[in-house]
Length: 375
Ligand SMILES: Cc1cc2nc3c(=O)[nH]c(=O)nc-3n(C[C@H](O)[C@H](O)[C@H](O)COP(=O)(O)OP(=O)(O)OC[C@H]3O[C@@H](n4cnc5c(N)ncnc54)[C@H](O)[C@@H]3O)c2cc1C
Image (cartoon, rainbow, N blue to C red; front, side, top):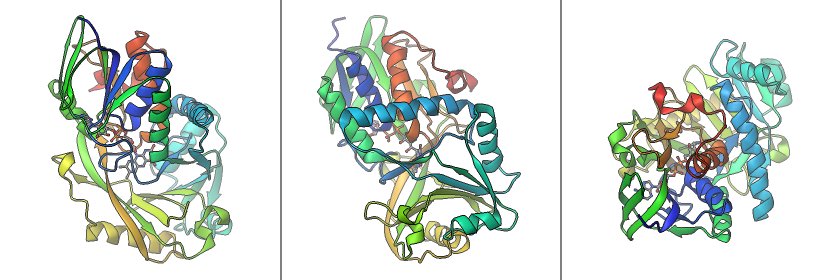
């Protein structure tokens, strides 16, 4: 088969934009196919901000990937000449025997990370905007902060284009077919052939990888922005990124930044979605009530003046960990799926690893714990 491209990337959102860049930078002839415009707000990578942190409560094995992601974000900032990350610190609060605080401490212990532990009294003395319930513990990670999500995706795509990448926006990949000598893809903008295919379809990964029957569940989540009436909820007032494990669920947020209000969202819960293209984007009263109850209990100086809302998609794997692998029946096809609501910070390492799996034939990145074989 004569190949139009060395690599085709299906889906140019978080992971796909990074894969596009690393393939182009490796000198590959690469085409990205994206159903919407770059940086759109209909998938999983919009809403201004994403948290990045090292002391990962979800699994200690992410820490080496996080170290690499920090380095790769810095490298991208240098190359594109834009600021994509801001170090604000992260305060995580919860019961000492919950999931979050022990998980953070386990990662910090295993990987020698610098974490401060605070009791409930120290939390309100150091951070007057926050209130912890008696007996709750805080863990403070200074080297954590915020990535500006749409800016990151544009930075990857613009820089990839400078390295020669081509991108078809507003173009849908309809189906693909792999054989021993290449991959053929049919899109709404024509047919193309390639040596390799990288699938980074986010909430549509299950459809794009239909024959694998991936055990993915798509959830609708909501983000809310509220006017910060007090300086203690701004970076100038030393407000960090925050995450609370409470009896009513896990909530997190970001200080009021870049002219926007304080952002707050629930990480737990979520509404199962049948068709990710047809979700209800309106505010659900119950979601808003849950958020405002959280604010009243834990950020008592915040008013409830709502400035904005957006719906977004989590694509959950059964164990909440990513799936990053080669297609078991088609070695020319690799994919990332099931980022489970915590993948953005790691898109550099995910995109680069997918490119290595295809173009270099393999990777020594420590990703065995993310393989498809575990299901
Ligand atoms: C509310 C919310 C808050 C979050 N907070 C954080 C956080 O603080 N920190 C963090 O690290 N992560 C966070 N996440 C998770 C993170 O944002 C996602 O894991 C990550 O952005 C997903 O990237 P993706 O590339 O898998 O999906 P996407 O960025 O959605 O990209 C998939 C792309 O594929 C395209 N596509 C799909 N099918 C086709 C097709 N057939 N043809 C062409 N194109 C197609 C889609 O249009 C889309 O652009 C959050 C997610 C949400 C929803």
